[in-house]
Image (cartoon, rainbow, N blue to C red):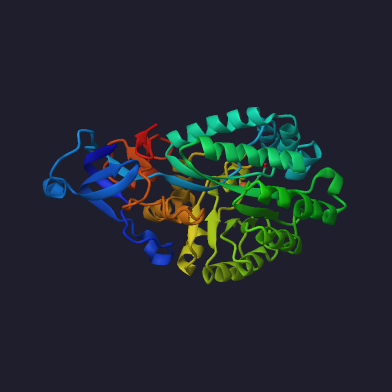
Length: 413
Ligand code: NIG
Ligand code: FE
C-alpha cells in the first residue's frame, strides 16, 4: 500500500541522522515547508518539496491525502507511564484539596499501596481492557509509542499479572510499547521492617520468571527517602542487569539522596522525575550518557516545584519529556499538555519541548531507529494538526485539541 501526502504546510522534525539531542541542538527543529511525504507499507519512504513532486514521483499513487494548511509531525514518544492499573484515586485528590498530607493519605490506605490493593482483585482481562481503552485514547491525542511499567502488583502473582497484560498490549496494539519491571515501587506492608526480604523476593523469585517469560525490557526502582535507598536500588539493578534488563529509574522526585550518581555509574538509560536536583546532580547528569526524563504533569498535579529544565538543557543534559500517566500523581496521558506545560512553566522553547517529546523520547525507549522523527525507513506514525499558522501555536494554545488526525503505521486511527 502506497500513500502520498501532499501540500503539507510544514513537515516537522525531518532528520537524516539519528542523534540524541542536547544543548543548542535541542532548539533546532527542522521543518520543511510546502512538502510531500510518501509512505510505503507503513514506512516513510520519501519526502521532498511540492515543487519537486513531479520529478521525484513521476507516477503518482492513487491514495493521496491533501494536508493544505496542516503540519505533519512524528507522534509523541511517551517514555514513562504506569498505564496498567485498577480503579482510580480521585478520593485522594479531594483529600489533598482538603489539606491532607501525603503521609495522612498513606495512613488512610492511600498512595501506591491503595492501587496495589485494588489491582490484587482485578483479573488479567479487566486490566487489559482498561489499559486498552487508555491506549486508544492516548493514541488519539497523538501518542505513537509508550513505555509501560508494572509496580502496582508488589507480589509475584500480581507483578506477573501486570507484565503479562503489558505483553498482550504489545502483541495486539499497533503502537510501539516497551515494558518495565517496577517491582521496587514501594515496600509492601508486610516487608516495611524487612527490606531485604522484599529485595530477595524481587531478585530471587520475580526476576527469573520475568526473564524466562521475556516480560520486561527494563528495570525500574523508586529511589527516594522512605522508599528504596541508593544501596537497595543498586542491588536490584545489578540483579536486573544480570537478566539483561537495563535501568530506567524514578529518581529525585522528592529528595536528592545520591541516586543520580549511582544511576549514571550503572549506565541507566534514563533517570526520571528530577523535581529536586542539586547543582552536582545537574553537572553529573549533563556529563553523562543517561537521559534526564522530565515529568512536569506530576509536579503540576502534586503542586511541587517543576524540574529545572533550563539548567539541565544549558548544562548540556539530554532530556526527554513524558507523561508519567498514573492514578496517583499524573492522571493524564495527554502529551500535548506535557509539551505546553514544559514551555509555560519550565521555560522550554516549543522546539526544545517537541524534540524532547519525540526524538529524545524515542532514545529514552531505545526505539530511535523506528520512531521519533520524519526519517526514511522509520514508521509512519504521524500527527496531522488542524490548520495552524506556526508550530509554536501548538503549546501556546494549550488545552485546545489541535490534532486533526493520527496515523499509526501508515493508517489513520
Ligand atoms: O511516578 N513516584 C512514584 N510513582 C509514581 C506515582 C505512583 C502513585 O502514586 O501511584 C510516579 O509519580
Ligand atoms: Fe512514574
